[in-house]
Image (cartoon, rainbow, N blue to C red; front, side, top):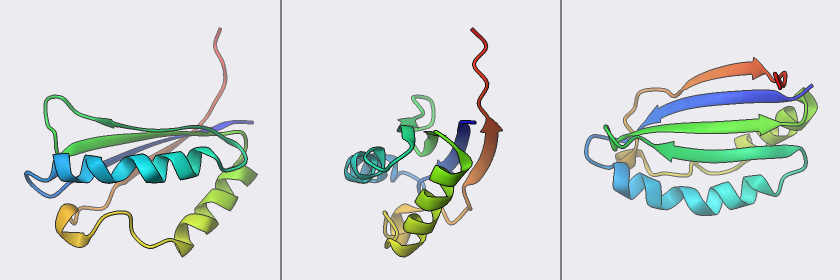
Length: 98
């Protein structure tokens, strides 16, 4: 069964535009991973330092492989662009309703 992740994160105050520039290469890499059905980031129009990452994986195994690989990569952003507040992650089992 597909797994949906919703991850909220923040840039350091006033650094949202700088952080947003770093996402595209990582997004493209992850989107090529087996089982990745969606991996997109959205930047708030009301609070440009706030981001939401939407992920959808074909199953828990694909997500586990991604998570293991992700642990081996250097952080996407340098510490001065991150808020220091840990991202908030929610996992959902994806069940199509239509």
